[in-house]
Length: 432
Image (cartoon, rainbow, N blue to C red; front, side, top):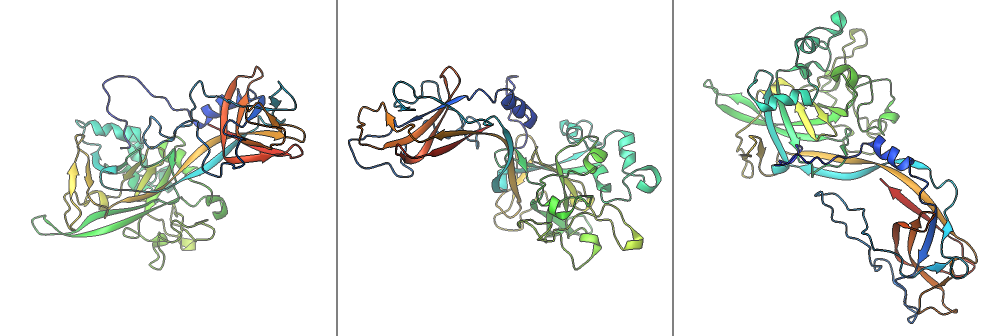
């Protein structure tokens, strides 16, 4: 789940931040000084070449961390058959200049639907001082002390508070937490495209027994700020002034809204679903942003934020009391749905009726190492089956330091044929 796994030791697995990875790569980015090419997968006794998808790998993809990919290669793996740059024994050539540049690259991991045991819930309360989960108010930077709470009960126009804004519910005493299993998302959830469905009681008998359940649908979006919609299309978290002002630091968040609570600008013709999960959702899909405060003279109504998504934690804090106070915790209204509890006291809905659809992103730092095999270079090999009449069949490239130690190896998906007069460029990417 989105919490750390239980353990009986105090061994801590540390993960590099984006800045940490950038510094690690930047401070060592000139270590890849040379490259070599190999044809260890070529048998020149046959005229057949290995087609795409048939070159043997150097390592598997399964990683120690479930759901992640292994990028390591074991010691002892090398280039068994090297191509000569020109003549024996020279087989290494310097990489091209400017191969030490570092480029940040944002990658979309893909869409996931979290449901069942991958999506757990618990209600936390500021008044429950005997509950360990009350600590999570601090983890999520939600208001706890009297001054912080006061900020959400006083008006912005009076004392710089949030009571007359769309964020007033963030000061709620009771909060429903939805915890996404950390195997279900990547480095960070994409704050543009979250969709959540929840069962909410909408009717009670005089004795307090629920008589009806309605499915509430929640969507994520960002507040109206100075950025135009074309800029918002490429942002995955709230980069405005509001995270710092609301939480006291610039954390990675997006906000949840719902037509079932209040439509955009309180306009019955508008919907928060507009632009959901579309390309360029704000500029082309007309995805709505949040009116933070009412402006009567221009007909702007403050929208209602019903919760906040902590994008790097995979935790959703639902703060709107209509949902929190009426969430169906023992719902069995359709054949596949029931509730089950785990050892921590969290519950989840069985089946897939109530789920959260998310996209994940990953920030990679990429060093592009350009390696050029020019004319009259890398056209002969130490391969024992090679003859002077053969064209070399390249299947691997190794990056080395200035002493010839192999630091990285890449394999092509098929044989790459090179004649003496060919010029072939290989762009080798080192990703951290």
